[in-house]
Length: 481
Image (cartoon, rainbow, N blue to C red; front, side, top):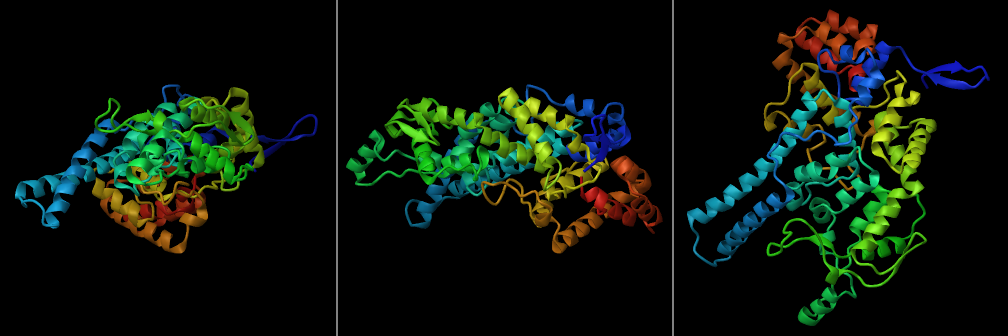
């Protein structure tokens, strides 16, 4: 792993590669791929180039509609009313009018356009940003705290979720990020938390009396917080711990239309399961909203969370099988700083293991397509130039297959059929842009010292610019980071 030097005491330690190589790594591994001149910019101080992108105010915000979760909820409320009217008409109730049908169709179109606008704005930010490390860091956390468009109501909230609960906190404390994501309406709808009611709560008793119906406890959010977001599945917790945590979270909900905080996080004391809890050996007294918040605080501070999440950071940035010493460095900084994510990001940049010149990570479809846009200093101009491509390559925007988020391992994305689809897209992209480029210069600009003689020769000997461009972006050096 990397260059090995020997200290005076005879200890083996990693040494950093040349500054030129580090500049290429800074831009292509820590970042999202090189824009023209970016590797040259990073050469003076590659580590400083990355550290300068860490900032307390968080990640950049996409230039989208700027709608809040509150506004999107109002939009969905209006649409759902129109949908109910349309359904009633199909059942023979009411007069069918062109105006009502048009309002329903307009609502459908607005929802689609809002979601597409969110997707395109995020991609444009990734294509243009001079702070690729900061954006990659934000995208890592958005995937870690996945919400997916498997539900229509959640689909319109993903953009606001990233703006409100992820990007402002990616260089804050992990506890702040955990609380913000766990209490956002997008997460509460995606994992059905808003419907979770304590079986012995006043709300459940009233429901049973009124409708002879038992209220249900939903464990989705509690389970995913423990398994995915914090301590990890191997932390030794039990099903009883998950159930007790779910009880502690009852009352975490979303404001109704007739309430002051409509479409925003609210705590419903009447839906909260009364009683004290014991979760992973810790006792939590009956304390309303503070009970669930106390569990979140303890999970954020748990050493097993540091180990689990730091291992994921190491896998995302460096290798599907990262060196244990890298994860240990990150974990140590995490524990020393109380989960200060700015300090963890700095520790990543300062870790020599992260600078091994061997490109081990295979790009996901999103990373591949966006790095190709960055290669030519351009951006996707319309959703039609982006969403169908990503869907065809297996990574439909905002549609992670499960709360685990998108996989990042090479085995998932480097199958022969997937590579053929990438080649077809690369050839089509090359046909549109290659004649306006110098592929030889692009190869140097895109990879710097990571450009191997074999790839440089293949690009230079290609019969056409289109062929040269496609060879470059399909090369192992470009496909890996």
